Image 1 (cartoon, rainbow, N blue to C red):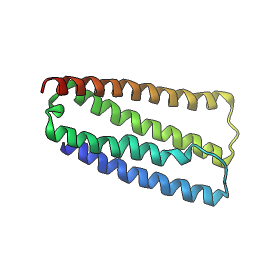
Image 2: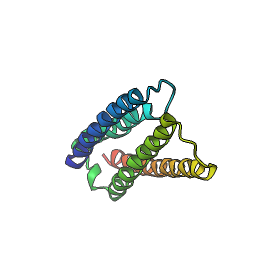
Image 3: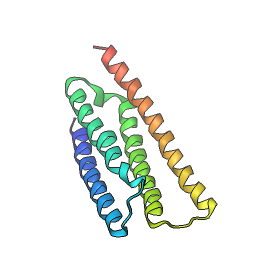
Image 4: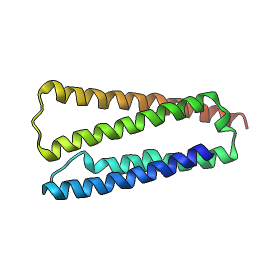
Amino acid sequence: MKKSMNAAIIYFALAMAGGVFYREFTKFYGYSGATTLSVVHTHLFMLGMFLFLLLAVVCKITKLEKEKLFRRFFLLYNIALPFMAIMLLIRGIVQVTNTALASSYDSMISGFAGISHILMLISMIMLLVSLKKVLSSK
């Protein structure tokens, strides 16, 4: 429970920083179009803070933290989510600054973003399997 609560607090701080960065960075550049910077805040808030708050409650009433697969989920997820947020930041900064990228660099950003999403998928499957195991054993 304590690890999940600490993760929720950290993701809350990162989500707030992401929102402030989006607002100030786009204001500085006078940018008013659509950008992936606008979703960094919500991704970190919902996929980070909110998920780990819920998991803290579940850990309080079950033995979820003792599950080996949950511990693996926790590690992989906390690699994948910041990785995804960083790729969103990079893509958004490129959009706001209107930086012309070679197609190989553009493809590289998309590829890394895809890898982060695949890691998120794997970690979420791990979470669901460990939740099912713990909840069905009660």
